[in-house]
Length: 281
Image (cartoon, rainbow, N blue to C red; front, side, top):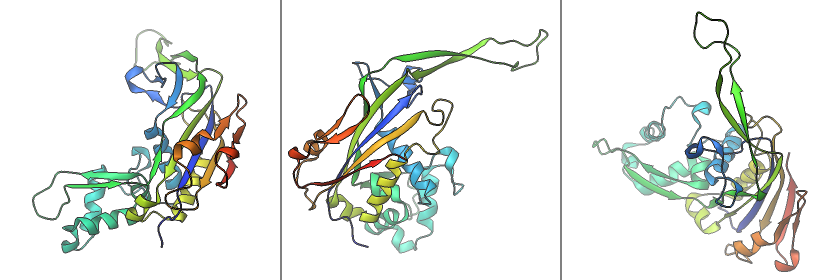
């Protein structure tokens, strides 16, 4: 199948209501914020959610979450080496061929890229280092306004261990959440030039778009209760060439989001550029 032939830019707008969209492990799990107090969801967290949605749709994923492992492999190294062993011995030693095979095997590899850098066992069959650059890039998401963070104390309702005394309800810890409602926006692009190297197709781009539209389905947790995070809109721009009619920066600047979450595009700044605004599911 032919690789992607047209540059694509996109914007994703979503809301967070009394939830923790992306905890910061270096700050006791509090919602990520910038130095100016704006809320942030990292690009890594967004790509994790995209991978999960692609996996839910039946796609093969290389970087699987521990709670979503489908092939029984315990690590990325094990997954890569198990796949490598399925290839003929002479193919295993050819990086160019292995490059094509792993891109063909896993949609997240041909989309986001991957660095395969694992210990070489010295038997001549293992690829110790293989870097793949992916055509799909996505930025961290930031809130439109500085956010307030609620600290919620958590207490236990039963004893963790048998004690002489009766039931205790000592404080166990603290949960954090973005107070009220916040609007976040992120932007991304898909490069046809890089897509030609990984075999990323227009059909793959549609799968990424569908994943963005339904990004928070099956993503519920105690930190992100069902319905607390919602995709407002995905703005999907398709250029008429590989190089693109406009720079990604100019396209991204054409997108505006008001205080109510209404999304609009300044068409005068990007005339003749095809786009669609898709509501979240």
